[in-house]
Image 1: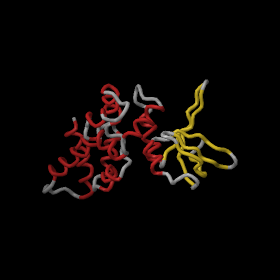
Image 2: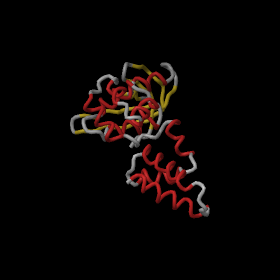
Image 3: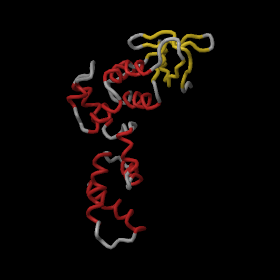
Image 4: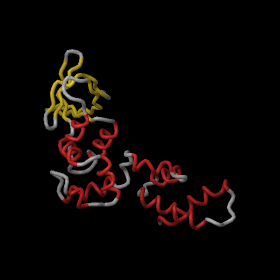
Length: 197
């Protein structure tokens, strides 16, 4: 389908952007925060898109970058959040702030997002904690010396933060022991799983 649309911004609304390209003007639903990041009317912009299609409706959603689109798609997996709700949530909280709130289980911050009630915020925490890792702050994990082990543990279904803590504990536990470098990674992995169970 469409990955992105590049064109001239013909107009902006509170949650809509009109993008002119090839003789067509697309009406695209865009989170307010993403609209603020776009250039002014009359200038060229690129929106990463997602098409919502049902029997009675077709709607195009757009995002300033691929990270925002990926977050939108993750939000759609949460029970009770549809495309309109996901756009409203993204319009009410920045990317890094959302990831931080989920990682720290900050229910209060999530409830402060306009249109997001306590029950939906709780469902978001359960469904997305440890899954959003797009921002530079979250990507810092990947540059750690145990990044591959961390990704393997997350892939097995463990919570990212808990897995990172378990690896740090395992690292301290085997520090000072006479372990060959080739065996260290295997031992770290086994010890981390012990700490996680």
